[in-house]
Figure 1: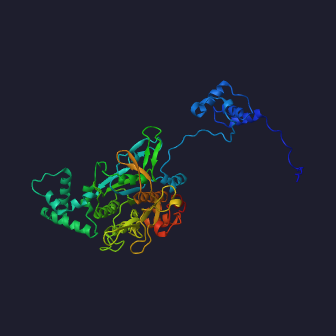
Figure 2: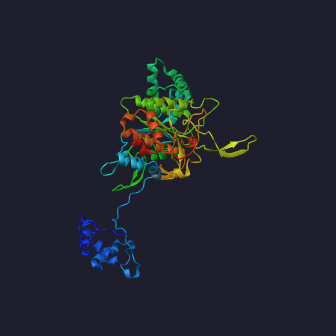
Figure 3: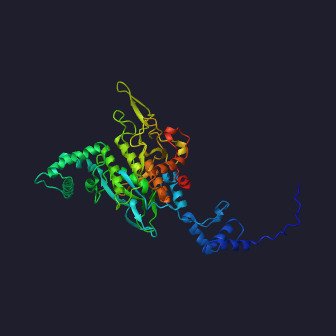
Length: 494
């Protein structure tokens, strides 16, 4: 079939000459790159050989400074010429997987006004990953770890024998012990009690903690404050804090980014509940949650918007109903006060069963959510692959629901395999666990509050948003919860 000429069409224009095309191409290139047009024209056979000056520039531009000898090269087909742009170091794969980088760029979110507590083994605040940075030059500033409390001291402070030693005549006391004794004496005086009643007061405070009642934080809080915190003996808390809020840059200008967490400018509180030997007591965690509420009630203190609990305690079915343990009750109270709590689901998804006679049977534990993940007032987070969650699904170790009383848990999943994060003494390591999945969700909650100030103090609404915008991985509900965390969708939905 032939095409008929259109009488109304404009007449064809003569094609521009090669010289005109070259001149037009040169005009579109950045200053100093006009030689590139002549070189490309020669390579494709439409121009003369470049002069000596252009040839020298081309040699410098070729990787490895290869000689400009086209006779020995096969014919070249050039599809595109592009400028060589500087490459930026990639942030962690898991940050990309939950779309935190895209959300920050699209919505221009800064979490500098948000404060999060890390209830864990401690944060190495001297690590460069937690330095603040000048918004213009990028130069490092003070640490973003704005306060440290050592909750592992709480049992000692409430021990009547320890308290008695403070009031023993002639006892040599450290400055910290002298401060504690003075505060005890003031508290005793206000209560109309004598110094000899100090051990009894300690027992009363301990009983309150044992029964889930509020402690006298006006008395205890100053002693738990650590003025000059040392480097934690264990790196778990530092790594968890890094996944949430690391901003590790080079030592010198231009301070190139080495690693970033979900919220690279967030402020952090360090609540230490894990001792040097790796042990922790449930009462220490309960006390940490009470302390958060106490600090938030003080008008002169910075509000703690949320807390991350990347730790787990096996639910004791013989003593408490599921979700009703002391730590779960304390989580519910703190949640009701307006604080977002994010908890790891636990790493007991693949357990060994003990049969009669002591024989072990390997297999998947069908119900393995740990406390405080069993609490209603927390966002419970399972783990998935850091880069390919759709392909690999929920991690084999991630604890599975439902809870012991039939509630749906976990709430959602986030990357928890081969996660990279900082460790004390300017270190960097890679590890697995739901402990590292949880801070991804903490970061998402913080970004929601930073972007939408009206969400501050509304943890239930934040939980609904995060679960409602999660990506379905096509796995069983009791494995994946609502699905994979998607920070970009969460911010777009509000």
